[in-house]
Length: 266
Ligand SMILES: Nc1ncnc2c1ncn2[C@@H]1O[C@H](COP(=O)(O)OP(=O)(O)OP(=O)(O)O)[C@@H](O)[C@H]1O
Image 1 (spheres, rainbow, N blue to C red):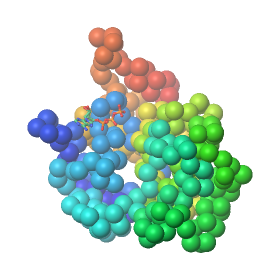
Image 2 (cartoon, rainbow, N blue to C red):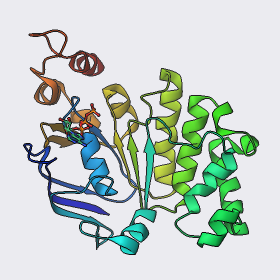
Image 3 (cartoon, helix red, strand yellow):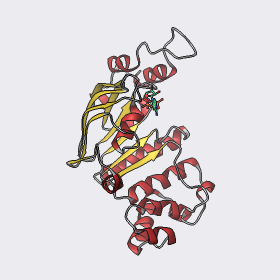
Image 4 (cartoon, rainbow, N blue to C red):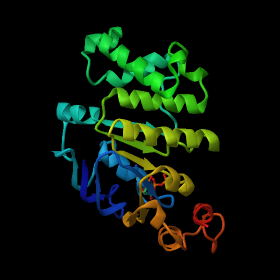
């Protein structure tokens, strides 16, 4: 279970970007985080795995406090948090298998890591997971020879190799075409249920949030202003999240994000 309470993040001396967030995610729920650009979605995800240092508040994963951990304790805690990024973050010149095994680096010794001598159990697990997402036939291919959707599958498997207790996905479909995006969202949804894994997805595409997630959290200016089931994510919720947010190019008009989101609930 993930329990975030009163989370505040302030970059430098600026106004806080997260203003006292509370969020609990349990079991195998798939939760999407939506909101206009700058609402603080990425900052929240990055506070969870401490890529960004929270200013104050508490983030507990299965009872263990993550805020204020340092050194070895932080490294051990991070092993339990899988993360998938918009840009995949693979090492292009390495094979798919090598990228996938990188998910075990937090578990093996320095010697095993530099000599790439991973235990057989890790290799078996890698093949099992690659099979599950349909990429085992690419095991020896270089990562940069794969399509975007295949690369994101590699990234998902790498995250699962960590045996995570939660999976965070920061715009996992933003670089993919619509059909591939749907496949990746469907995959995340199925894996969450198969592995009893909570998944938090930061996403701009409201249609996909409604279709593939169990719960939608809407953020605006660093605060949570909607938390409910996709069926309850109605026009009022949309207006609260996106209403009146002006696009930088077109003063006086609603943002493109707002328009897209409104079409999604129409
Ligand atoms: N490293 C940083 N230093 C200073 N300000 C930052 C930093 N990272 C983010 N911010 C600011 O924090 C606010 C929230 O950014 P964040 O990336 O969390 O929003 P977001 O909702 O994920 O937006 P997007 O959907 O565009 O990714 C923005 O105003 C952004 O400029």
